[in-house]
Length: 245
Image 1 (tube, one colour):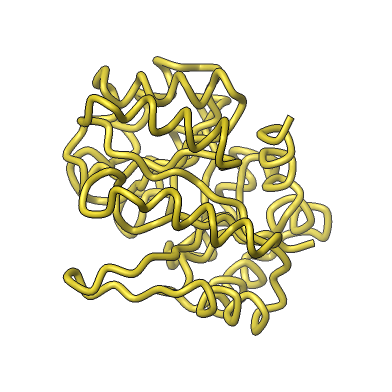
Image 2: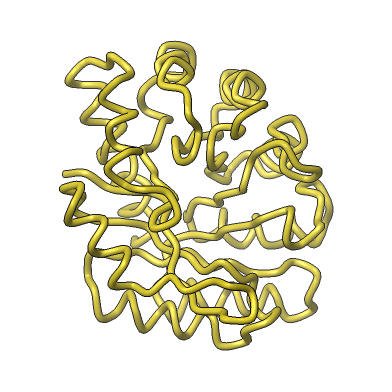
């Protein structure tokens, strides 16, 4: 089974975002991907207060999809919103994005959400890249502060911080690496070699990034059949099934 650990569904015309669920499903079908994690582009409750409910409805209608709650940590009701998403809407994880929230991963507003996720056994995905509040060395603060949380560095540090992302995952056993929109098959191979295939997750960032292209990148990394089995779906299902218990 192939599981895409990073896709988006949202519709925000004012920001130019039109990412219907059908577009994600079409890309999954084209690439031969069986299931996917989905999240919004916006951080609830900012811009769209109904964002979590809309995404929950999309996941409920498509059993192939697992929702991750994208919540803005600066809002007073953010913890209650996350608890509602995890406990009542059936979400399987939390997504945090330092570019849109301007929240450092080591600050208390962020950590209170990470702790909620850890208490429920669901993974926490952080956007990682080249921007302030998203570099792997900054994200390591959250992983150290809440060692029981499974922390996923989306994009494995992006374009300029792949080495830092791999190094952080080497040092911190609760850190996982998501392969989406990171253009280097060699870095993927290095991550598997240095961190272990058990903590690398295939992801595409579809429909913004073509899922077929992102999947081809995995095939180019020269992994063994057993490593591919883990990276392409085994690791994802282990995290998602734990979240469901």
